[in-house]
Image 1 (tube, rainbow, N blue to C red):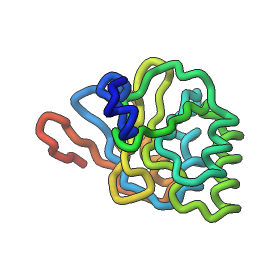
Image 2 (image 1 turned 45 degrees about the vertical axis):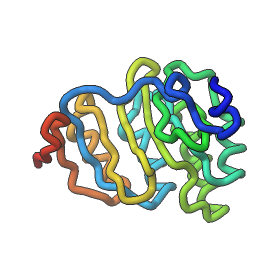
Image 3 (image 1 turned 30 degrees about the vertical axis):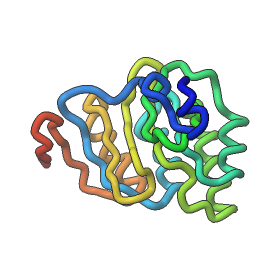
Image 4 (image 1 turned 60 degrees about the horizontal axis):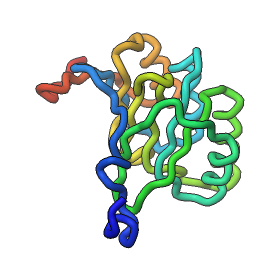
Length: 173
């Protein structure tokens, strides 16, 4: 870590490096501002579990909850934020934990619990959502079926799901 990085609190290239979603195509899911419905819908998309990566928590009660449930990261995820150096948590993607987080968010009126949300299976990133709960869409790996992605979107009351090819940036329906 450089002297400037320590003084100014930004992440170095080495710290920020890590796994990203890969592949030429992705499903595009429209954004939702409903944190609770998104968290409750994750087990529909990932019934076999995985890990939810929360980066840049914005509210102390949610950060405390995430810290209490965090596990040792099985996969280093690329930071979405360089400054200030973000906090991050890998939480097992289990329905009971997603429900617990949703209840906490609802009880305390937390509008945006975290800046970025990703889901991985310990080996690869399967969902990327930068600027979560704002206007940016979620990108989901095409390793997951369109039917499952549409069920996820439907549970959040968003749609339609489309696909994008990364080389051209073109959307397909």
